[in-house]
Image (cartoon, rainbow, N blue to C red; front, side):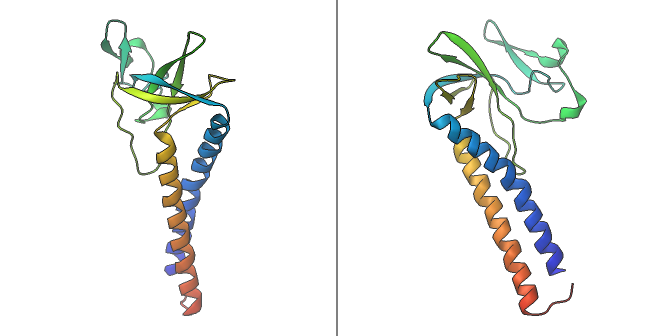
Length: 163
């Protein structure tokens, strides 16, 4: 029993840590040549959409995304805010924040202002600045699950507990 719990905790840590490490490495590449700007949340779902999502339209209004025909059943009900931000070259860019966490649902509102960090040489590469702290927290949670799983396995081996 203890080995099964240990194995599940180790698998949970892998599921949490691998996407988070990839996200942190992506953010570190951006941080080598970074700039920060303000962004605005346009919608709470991707442009592929989830039925029932809200998107921002000109005139500070929101409209039902399903009325625009953007829906895909494969996406499920995920929180995927679309954020627009401006870069110094007078170009407006967009960024879709995808969640990789098992536990945390980010709380974004349509029209909310956020800090966006982007690469000066490639402005299309960007991330929401607060996502750095969230990714570090997820890495710590995954590492904690890994340590607990290893400790449980060692306890089982030391006390010769049956499989």
